[in-house]
Length: 104
Image 1 (cartoon, rainbow, N blue to C red):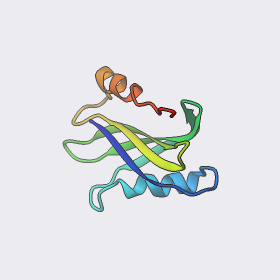
Image 2 (image 1 turned 60 degrees about the vertical axis):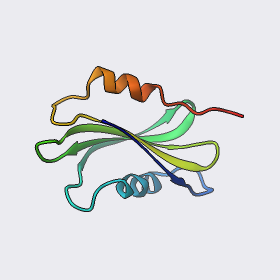
Image 3 (image 1 turned 45 degrees about the horizontal axis):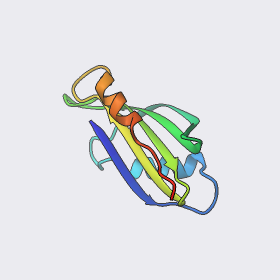
Image 4 (image 1 turned 90 degrees about the vertical axis):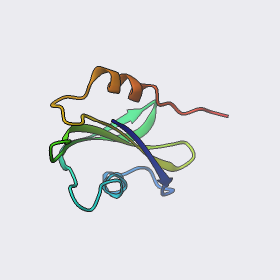
């Protein structure tokens, strides 16, 4: 499963607390995942945080979610999730890698 969410972001540089709030806004109120690890990173030279999640239930499994601050100041959540599996498939990872920002 691949998801993309976006919302206007702050004018300040991306911080972990802001990225966490953005990520949690994409979680359902019930059946939310647990966070297993977080790391500061970049996505195409843009500031980002990578969150490792574990979704519960029979359709749950591991997920990786990047919160990225775009050049336009917007925040993007890009999530790759295994659904009912113990690993994120190669195809799902390849689809995620196609996400890119364009410059005008």
